[in-house]
Image 1 (tube, rainbow, N blue to C red):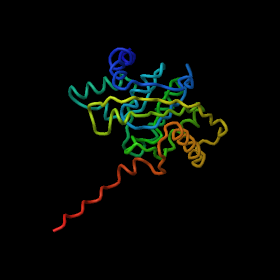
Image 2: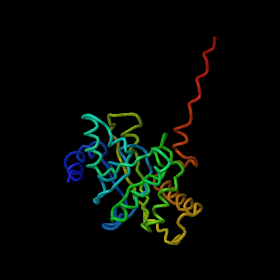
Image 3: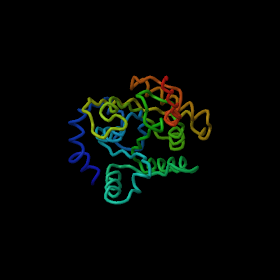
Length: 233
């Protein structure tokens, strides 16, 4: 109930005014049955504008920290992220990745739409980065179609590190479903998983028009900053 209240009454009207969103290719998303929406990831707002423009409910995986805060702020975060369809996952420890993929499989087995970001984190500079193979693993295990989705201009409305949104025209492009049935029975083959992932990233590059970078976004974010040069005497 809260999901639809947010979408149509509370949050939706505000998002529409700020982003004037437009979606292309909506007919590529099935009206029923499971599917993975594989999206590029430019800003936090990606997880709000895509559900806003798609009739069916979409579930996303979210870091568990959003659900474990204390006090009034923590209680509000738990309520808010639960209401908008976020599923908490523990991203720490050796079993974190396996737990996230298990959560995604359960949602798909229940017949839902699952939103996933193959880059694994937001782009630090607006370019499209190398995809991680977890999404491919889930797609091969479940046999569900993968639908590429390009989010455009969300980073302009919600630049990294900002709180107050900046009005921008949001465009969402939905590509045709990708069918990987030809790889049936090849689950667990890392070369196949990489091939599937690269095909998804190629479709996202074509849809979004982003420049592709063949490294993981997380590795760039975690790269230590070089010390500043000492000032000349």
